[in-house]
Length: 479
Figure 1 (cartoon, rainbow, N blue to C red):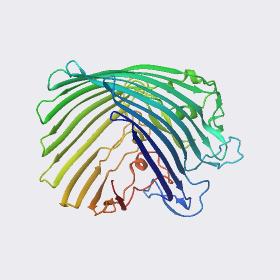
Figure 2: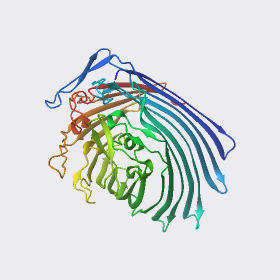
Figure 3: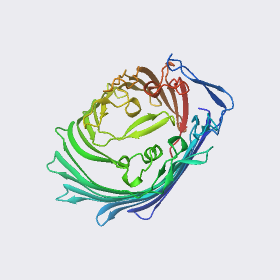
Figure 4: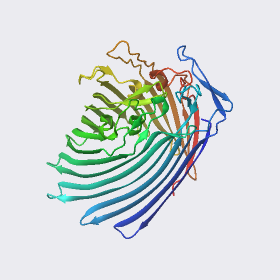
């Protein structure tokens, strides 16, 4: 990570009176690549990872720049309830590492064109909510709210001075209502509705030459969805809580990946099915237990979408585009911890996911989602110990399990994952002034190939090992 970064943060608040407060938060972050190293290709087929050496790489060093301003206002007794309002502005840009595009212009003028893409976006919005909990003899709490957002984004190629993704503006407003009703002293019913309305504005544009310089007619497609949610919580005992929930999720489509990948003539933004939002039916059941010594959590979840979003590799641009297909995700996660003394605790966490998609359009899932779309199954064990009032440690062992991926079509190549285990150690020392944190990631220097490298199309320049042993030292003081 040949880079330098800085992060400036400031927060100031004014207590207008005992009930009202105004607060301003400003943050500036920048990471700049020094560009002093070049990639040394590995051999993905032979399992040899890429590395780097000092040199003068082509193009500019990758960078991230972000400026955000957030204004918060709270009133604890507005009309007998609690009112929160937030307005925000975010200005973001990111220049990514470059790659060879081959015959980018399609006319043979430069068979090895090198370019870098840069994402530029500006986001503004507001969040408003009002909540009051003294209805039906203090058993019912109602919350009303409204979210407003506007996002203007484009992605350009620096060397060719062309837009990979045209400038798009997405505006949305989302009113919602939520209720929490204690039916008895131990049973709570929660539910609500959220109405999402969105509008995307895109002018006429032309795709990159590698996609055939296709002329695409712009448009202003609109979306409108009302999303319910309902949940039930039962406090079976003072230590045990059971719950079940159903909700409909709403995610804006990956607009940029859809628009930039158009490679056939005659397309119109208003008629692109792939720009429709991802609507998912989410169900979950679970339990929580805590008796002071044993703490446990167990949950199972199901998420189905008739028009899901899957990332698939594009060999032309050497990047990922979006495929919209039916998807089904199933998962179980749980953790348990035991406090064996006032100063020590040990625990175990496990998560597994099964994710499949419809590869042939018959509305039945038949193939595994590839690794770029789903995480590996994982188990983590930890032990924390306070040795003295001023010194404590945490040891953590994480195992990512092997994972095989299957596709209905045997001609489609899939890439499996060989798991690995890492150990981390954290120590905390309380000083007369402040606290010193010392962490060692991958304590034993385990050599492993990253999950991304193993489960995506092999490339000799991106087939990389995971992070080796890393020492981090930090000091903090609260006042």
